[in-house]
Image (cartoon, rainbow, N blue to C red):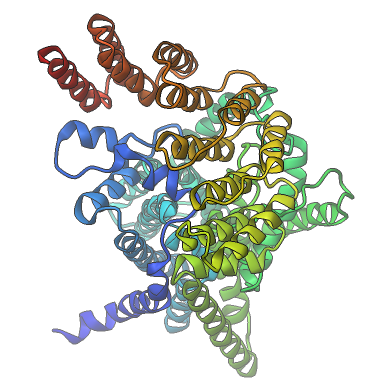
Length: 637
């Protein structure tokens, strides 16, 4: 009674153990990059109790994506409610999600191989599926979707992608066998899997495409009698074709607008050219991952300015065309290889085409890498015919699997501490401004802002190196000024001049507003003695490109708390609200100042506006109630 279930469960249990073993060293790596705006500094997410309004605000606190990714945000809020802002439990949760996905992939591939060769060698089929699942689970390109805390959005959305795709294939298996219950599995797998996945991240929108690829390469859209199933055609018209047309109709006017790429150093055309090279890099990293190449920061990539600038651009476009042609040509002879290529290429359609995202991130290959593992499994374990060829194939699969697992373990070890991770990223990508800044920032923290710390020269040297890199922005300038001000060191005039010059020259994005906010906060808290003239010149330079809501918000805080000019601060917050009326923080700041000034009637009107902008979900209700309590206390006093 016990042995039979254990025989069925041991591959999944072994996968879970391997994932835990490979990723365990990386649990202590701390927060990085996008973790800060999405998790660490997102105060709405920091729930400590079970207040309904607080949870509503937390669940919809993400500004990423069209739907705010509420399910993923709910898991972050739950982490915070249970264990506070400690990154370790959040990373352990991510590891558990990846282990769950590994089990789902194992079941998905088992069903897929059974559909591909129902009368073939069952044992060989099962071991091929186990190898491909293990390779995907241990693949180092997937590490960023696990140890990079905020990318739980990616891995969690794929719980529903893998689960929905598996359910779809189970339904098709029953349908082809003439068994009842296939129809509801097919529909719910695609529809519910996509809908639930979209609550985590938009990557789940590709689930119907993955199912359509399986039909095109493997199943042919046929029913048990071998005829075309019109119901499947109708299903894909409803869940794939119509949404794709609607999405393009909505997306194209936005990406073709002049402001779409205003904060990027590439245009739509140069992005498409560059992404051809990026996708080929992804393929290389998926087949032959290199510890020296893989990393969080790839902002050192050279943008393609033409077909031959650099020459690899034209070669990449030709290679992509050949891969697509191979996927089509091999559908009959090597359906699993064809499907692997189709899944890899299909997974790039959202992030490597027209959407003005950043150019390179490894976590975008969380599903694409499964296509590569499927193709490798077919070439090494199913293609060989003779005994000698099969033995060579098995040896190669074992060697590749060990290589993948070892590389992931070494990468996870790089995440064992924040400073170690920053040091390794800076060494791998010496021309990456973000890598240099993050290493310099952590060196600054290590100085504890003491002038006699031996870390001070190292921090200044690394930040100066970052400042000299192309596209470095103003983050290193802000870090240098903060170190100098807090440690009592000289604040060099060229740091301020370069900072304001870059603000006037370059678009003001998230990194620029983050740097400005750090300087303003230090001045506001009386930890930094910055020249008022230099700070005002910074705000003036940041506003030279036109009104920016976040710059206005930071400027208002400085005018109020440093310059002591409340009426000017109220005007600046009013301007910020006019630009972004749904941003609750701006209106909340203005209301608190109105209450402090005794302008109760105006404060009440603003609170009503705050409530209305959070409707119908009531996401601002908790903030509104808190402001009303403050207003009542002020009135009593």
